[in-house]
Image (spheres, rainbow, N blue to C red):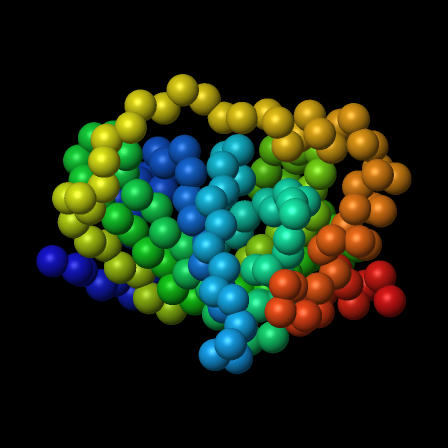
Length: 185
């Protein structure tokens, strides 16, 4: 029951805007490398055009997506309806990392509410859009976004954020460099 689209239609954009979380998947080229799948929230995803999306990426314990994009560019996003009619939406594309010191940053960051701990913006050009039934996705009630991560970075401050990024966000768990790591060298 999957349907394929060449781009993100207005109906699909409305579906994306309604979701409170999404998932990002990426992988290295090496068959021995780790596939990464990360949940995201905090109203951090934007549809920039029918074929381009972006999300504001906050500093976390790893930086796998960034390393994978730097190596091969492959990225997939998934949205699931946890309320209302069942639906799954996947966006398949190629992505890149935009760091805060990039010339593109001011234009891109204006699309987002900036939270403490911002690390980078992930931009992706979408090649294929797929919807599926989502009949087996459970129903969940939305209670709200967590503020734990942003409060953590508020306490750590800019110096703590930069030290953490240098220590934990410059290489993937497979040893691949991230654009952040390359910028720190």
